[in-house]
Amino acid sequence: MVFILYSLVELVRGNGAIAVLVFALLLSNFNELAKRLKVEGEFELDTSLRAFHVEVSFFVRTFFFIFVGLMFDVRALKSEVVIMAGIIFLILLVARILGVVVIGLSDKKLSPFAKSILSLMPRGLAAAVLALLPLSAGIIIPHFAQIVFSIIILTNLATTFGVFLIERKRSTAV
Image (cartoon, rainbow, N blue to C red; front, side, top):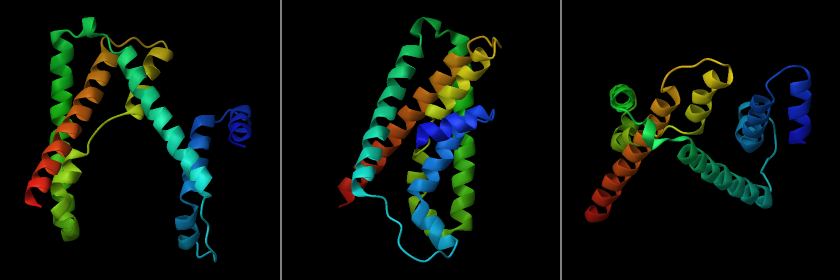
């Protein structure tokens, strides 16, 4: 069914990948959508479909990190790449801090989770795919992909470190 949807959308010159994404989002969140639309009845995905979803998600995540590892060229890590990635990472971190402060001030129920929200900032598949779009369109931006992949790695390392600190503090408090 998904392949048919993809093919039909591509046939009318639409974006098949986005159509499949929207379809998957609607399918996995149909129960919540039905509540908001005031549709009677329970809509649950079959447990085997949920298990399949977990397996596919694991495969996609694994493939993504293999892809990033293959695309990341250590020889291309020049000082300007490291500096630019570091500056962008710091900008992302400051924006994240400001966002968490605003959320904490606007919703006091979220304040206890501020450190968790702050630390969960990894970039991933979307950033990697978008980093390759200019190249596929024939636009050459020097070191662009390396900078993006460096930011992906930095944000994932920061998330890992942040979660480690939060969990260590939580385990000593218990």
